[in-house]
Amino acid sequence: MIPNFNAIYALLLREAKIFLREKERIVSILISPLLFLFVMGKGMATGTSPVAGYTYQQFIFPGIMAMVILFTSITYGLYIIWDKRLDFLKEVLAAPISRSTLFVGKSLGGMLGSMIETLLLLLIGAFFILPLGTVKILLCLAAAFPVSYMITNIGLAIGATMKSMEGFGLVMSFLTWPLFFFSGALFDLAAAAPYIRVISLFDPVTYAVDLLRIIMLGQGAFPVLADLGAIALFSLATTILGVSAFGKLQQEK
Image (cartoon, rainbow, N blue to C red):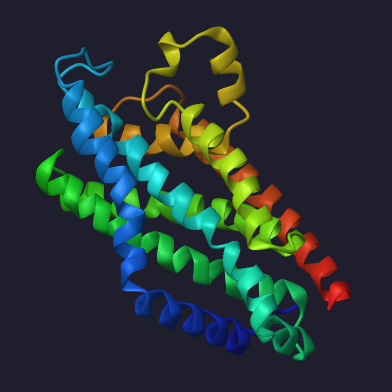
């Protein structure tokens, strides 16, 4: 089915306006990553970095960037539940557009917020932590785009199946922290316990952290093509999951 680009643009525009109005949200999301970088990163500055020539603070910077993408993107699923309460979603579901069009529009809206947060952290990190040239900044943003899409899809799929914000919060807490900690964002996977390495292979954030680390530091646990292939595979799987969840959402309304 051919997507309705006018509907996608309208949904994206609405989400952009909502995000930019909530300026406190932009600041609050960055607090935890900045604490990891400037408190934990500096606190362990005397430790040995797994990548020669870089400090521990610089080593975890790609992982903290992935953390911002993860938390910003997956939290966006909460707005589906909010739209249900405002009856906005009921009006959209009654419109002559497909569920896939609705899903793409909402997904792009979530990605917009995630990319803005990622850019802000990237500029802060490039200035205070790890000097990055224009090419590396652009490559990091390019890598963040499919990762944001992948994680936003997970958040939307969860939000589409949940009926309360409290329930969504519990599921999100249960999911996000394991995804973050098993990704190798704060440590070298090669030196981790065997069970952690095995679990990390099934963690989509692992490949995001590794790809960003290759771009920024020139070293990763997997080849670039393996990271890109895994991200593409997870993106496809989450797209199918999200579209399926939105199809059931149509029946509920």
